[in-house]
Length: 238
Length: 317
Image (tube, rainbow over all chains, first blue to last red; front, side):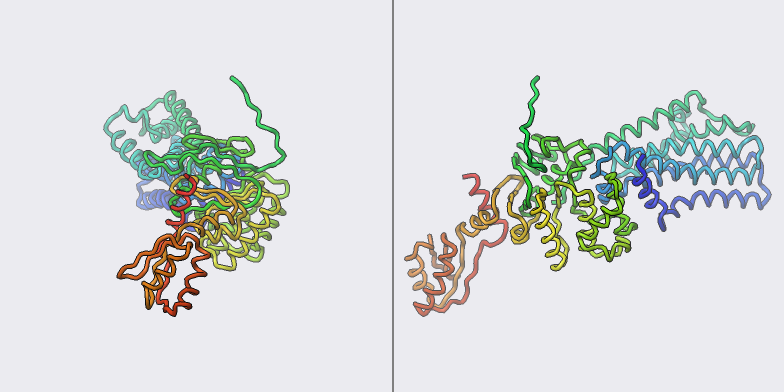
């Protein structure tokens, strides 16, 4: 970890208009939950449904994409990253620091809003709020690492990330049960299911698979990203 | 396996490129360049597209040579982040963190270097580039020249032995340009190794004692700026001249050894001058003596490309 790198990255992510990218979806989640509560639809079943489809199924991957790529891809694109790289700091340390910033941002924005929305709908019933909030936090860690890696290896990180989240996790995972095993979203649900005792919800992937898989993916993505950043080349305009 | 120890030298900050090439796919950007850059100011001169940035990036550790080696004081530059304790880099790209103030930007550089007194170092660097007054403004409000200076301050904050600047004078107004030139010159005199790239001969000449010329990826010439300048002015010049009596003028010019060939055409005279200073002094004198009016005297190959092309042909001889 490098404090200066973290400070600059937090400022870049939270400064001025950028923060709205991170605030918008969590805000929408809480507002939807509040509206459902106002029309009298608040119950545990609705809470689980909203958490599965929107909080974990939509908001978490998108926040992951915004923060995971956002901590490094724009800097590589416009060349400002040179300020950090032309210093006696090892590149893997820079990657690790950027990862911590991204993961913490996703975890806080996704975790807090998920807890708040679930609590509005189900209160403390069956540990739904606790479960999904923890699932969001754990998912945040894996998404941050994977999307950070995308930001380092390709200039089309956002496109590739959207395709992964929507096509693989969303569509393929929806029809092909086997694909769910290799989906961060499903791993997050597994964690949620493990904490929650709700009868309306059963995760498809076992905890025994999800946790090691998540660990391997996170560490692997970070190591790879560190190696790629070590060999980052600048091509001249001339 | 044998290990070789590099000879012990007291000189510091010596960049050595040994048979360095860099290609992208089938395109060769830098072709078998060997050069040594030592203390003092060196200008890397070449037309746009000559591979100056590619070469500079290899010296700065932001590009691996496809073949050959790039070292600083005998230590490999690529994949060696510790080398940045010795190097300060001013990239050509204008982009800097616009949301930081100049002070925060330079201070962050000092802290990233892990300096003992980062605040003092940052103030000193900002003072060196005369940015103290504007240091509390956000960088996004700066002019291009101010951004350039704040980048120089950030690159100098750890007092590096080597300073690499990629087209540093681009986009600066004349006053800022003179100031930065003066700064670069003084740092060179203080014994630092400074290398900057430029495609403008006059710019390089004003600052650098030593010039390396790169043309089409090849190392075309190397030497003292006077030497380079002489070779550039000594080359055969082609002039087009129109006058009131071309034929009489032609006869008088060809009688003098400063002209190698004179041809008479409907567009006037084309003269190949082989002794530039002598020819330029001779022409008006002859015209006056013969009472011939000169209507047009124009050099036809004064563009930089042809100057460089001549230098390459000269160096391969």
